[in-house]
Image: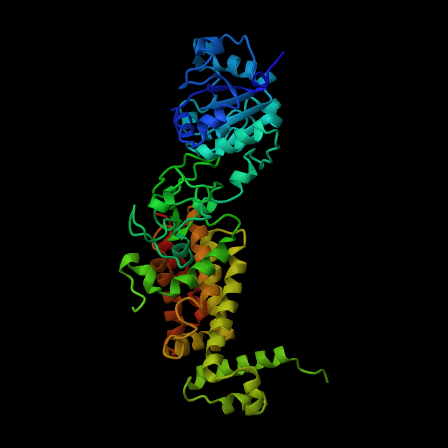
Length: 301
Length: 197
């Protein structure tokens, strides 16, 4: 007779071409142990598991949930076996496949190594033409470089509780990716009044105008579900690189592309004319509190 | 006879005020002058504009929206940046010929009486529709590789300062030729100064 323990879904963490960034990021999930107890972990590259990588590559068993990390390159090998063979074997019978990170979702940084043959597992950048296209229904993309541990925590929790995960057109959970990274940024007031940041790491100023911040164009909940439960890149003064979008990595991540001082890209869904009108008027006003150091400002000023 | 709507009356005041302000000057022109020109009582005038200063600001916005809409039409055409420059220059010079009060007002009242336009009309507030369209023009020009990527105001000043200067000379009757004859050479000069290097 099977015990309740035996009914745990089986979980397999596979890797394509990767830096292990998602593996490590996931370890920062505060409730990692509790979550993993709900699964039977067949293989993980950094946790002692029932099977070895050689066992996984032999393709003699199956699993319920695959987490795939890294860029898909069909000729890349794991334990001497082509990735193509390994991935297709497990994908056939898996109930859910999670692409962990932007490489697995869209191709990402490691696609640059062999751009002609590499991609994400379902998408090649924005095109839904990856190798697992026929398994589209069961694929969830968790883009990000790396993924936020809570995003993986949410997804696995939904799966283990048999909850349907609604996704956007790029197969990312809407619960996690319908927000923009801009939402919840502590610099929003500077964005409203068009006050630039004078450098990296400062508390004051917006990073959108000069430092290359992509937060107003990037679907991510980094400023809603904070990193390490305390902060985010934009909060500490580093621009958002737009790492959850299919066009990541872009070039010149630390500078805003402008045409005659006018930002080439404006906030998502905002017509450029409307943005420029609003920005021009906001810049007319000088708000003293926003022009100096926050700690120096006195209400009697 | 069809009844004149409130909106038409307002346009009538704007048109009369533009002419008077640009011909006689802002301070010399009085509200009774404007009311008389449109054939209404001074009391009735105040139903449309609460003060001369408010009217003055409305006029800048009116001109800015007019020029902005003209440039927008040009921006949306499927033509090269060089051709767009020619069209903007033509539009501006035609306006100087056909509606001289608009440009005169801008140059002689708005730019010369800053104290009137301080509160509520400072910076980009009243000129935004026009400046925004010029931003779109420059942005598109750089994006399609026709124009050199540089500071917006350096390019804007070169373009509009040049046109404003020519219209000023025209208004002063200093130009030996009609404005029309300068369209080609001025467009070419602007393009040569701004084109991609």
